[in-house]
Image (cartoon, rainbow, N blue to C red; front, side):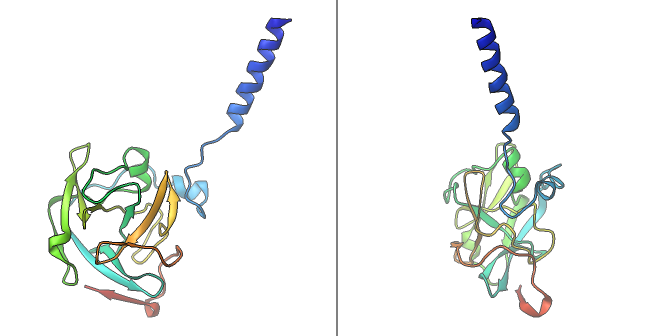
Length: 183
């Protein structure tokens, strides 16, 4: 009888465990959207260049030279190592560069630097914040990672002053008439 009770309890525990799923999708993003681009982490560019973009919802924020939004991870601290690696770095690829990065005309080059990641790549930082892309952003102006809590902390666009941008909700790129790109 004791053996039967133990087997029943173990069966119930295994069934509950198999019904529990870990959900690492970003709020508002389906599981299929989250996994389709999770095959690789971005490779370092030869020489990163930071630019800015302006949208009514966010004001002016940092992008790479192609206009892809850059984010900070609230779990990181300015001047410290990145807290985003392994599966986190697949969903939120670090912005990496082989050579020292360059700042666009409207940015303070003194705020620009790099940190070394565990894998030896150099991650671009601005005002000490390690910078990341979001795998859900598909085109310039997308800001689908804005103010999303994922993997233990929130993700935010970054202002030219090196501060997190808290206003505005996540959305795809606006039409060209709604966007004003700055170089």
